[in-house]
Length: 136
Image (cartoon, rainbow, N blue to C red):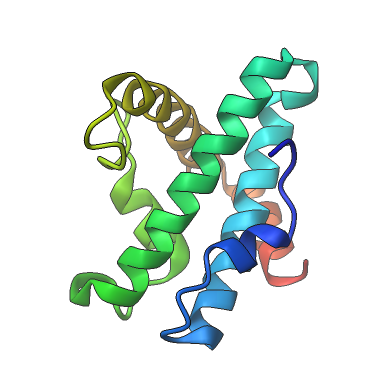
């Protein structure tokens, strides 16, 4: 896995609510792409790139599961669910039995959280970012 593309959408399919799953998947893909551009992923080592792609892929699948199966998130927008699962300190518990993978995921999630908060607090960035999500 060395790039984000629409095959991720297929990987994340649950076949419970295809329309909602597709909508969330496409938004997550756009958010993740914007994050990686901002992070300058192309300038990172091969290992770092792989780690980021791997953990963003896992996070996306987790977010979609939450949106579809968890009653708490049934009516929430993608960004609300994503921000609810992230914090300045960690991401959601995805790797229950692998502490090193979870620590790597937490690192990626902390950086993603910082990126999203930067966009949300900068009104011009926010306007441009959300406009790009509406018009991919």
